[in-house]
Length: 222
Image (cartoon, rainbow, N blue to C red; front, side, top):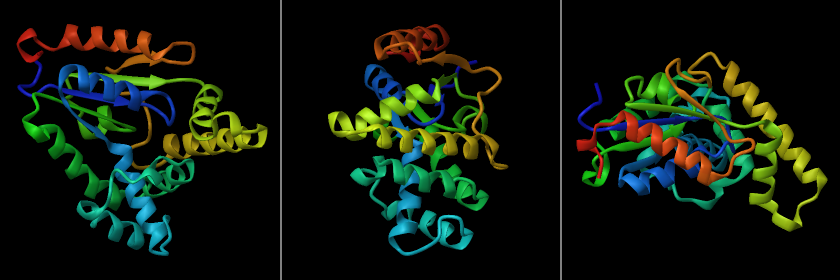
């Protein structure tokens, strides 16, 4: 049965479009939204800025414990290099344990008295919110995702070397995320798969909107 507070879990690899979709759905339903990747990015960036090693548990845990003081709106969090740092600290179980509580509390107690919560990340439907009302797994070919990130970062100023660097970084991150021992990136068994390789945001949004509207009771919707 749907929970009293609707929870929507959106998972997928980097640059698949899950963040864009999650934010738009949150606006539509007036739900609280959490980009869980920003938590790991903030931790990774803090480790780097304090001269630590993102693959060292002590350094990463120290940064994670400072989460309440970290700036989750820092523009640097969106860079591809910071994404790489996040992917590294995300392999450390002690870091995941700390951030797990933050994410689950957000889902169970959406800030701002919102009527529901939408979380996007890598393990929302499998680990963070296994009982989410709706689970969506967004995917796309790595080439398509690299092109999106390339346009986002460089626009007309980019070149082939920039694109290749992003493609290689995404490929490496995919491998790391899917093969890590702790909470690997994968679709939950009951997740709805949406491939955005050849779809625009409007098409994907309408598909997701239908899935959510069909699942959550009318009384839960605005």
